[in-house]
Length: 423
Figure 1 (cartoon, rainbow, N blue to C red):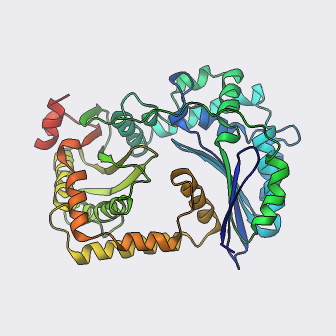
Figure 2: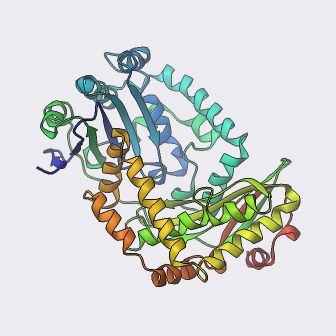
């Protein structure tokens, strides 16, 4: 019998499990195929607001009851909101799976959305927004996304603007919840010391009773435009993001993209870390990351440096972008492959990460992708193919750059000055 199994309930909710023999814990996640990209300007931030509100009480549990029920058995209850999905999950000992299933179904199906609680939680979210605004090395990533995906919800803040949060009311929040958090958008993943049969027996009576509704129209695909945005702010450092478009998460060349990211800026042995921090001491923090979505993607390089070194650091990042398509050796590529495979395998030792991998596979591929297949496809990337992709994707003319701090256009390296002059 396969370790990963999937059953679709009569209302369309999928239940996907992975059995991990010998593991003492299990993780259960309720996933919604909706995030900030599904919002309108008028309710930007509502998905994240709902994430908070589902922990504020149901018809049978207070907010304190919800917290105590999982913590009393040493478990973890949490949630997060992304640009394309939202998740509510619990990690518990195997024996406490029924407790987690009952609790998660209760907060998802029976939350009260109490008006007084909503007003209190608005204050909490407003403080969360201020915390990000006071943390420039966090804020710069939101500012980059906004510039990269101009005028598209994918580039909007997940938290939403303060004024929008203040103006939200119970009717608008409930309307979005009923439209987006219906069976057509919901699926459930579980992994650990459990069986598919047991999980189905627990979840079918709880989630099978939800009525299916027509799915809303899918959001349009974003289009990115290269360019430069400088934000003057009295900061000790300049914080910058330089990025380029990438194919979506399900693209056949995704493993080449992962390897590009690994060599450029993933870890202390990466090219950017070595060139910018180790050899020149120009930055404490420098790295790259991928944001690959259903229909678009980007790879972003971040660095924080002294304002006087902004031009040098941004120039070095552009130089490494260009160099990657020319002088990668077979041994460097092989090392990146081993790093990528090792990091993946180590990460998948926990039930929580296995549960989340099941969800990502469902969201982006509609089926489980085995570890064996992933390892095979990483190993299939050739040096010739890698160089060709790197040269095509890391093109200077495709760069979007956003910097915040004591910055002026004259500090830009020549490549970015050309982009800035184009608007």
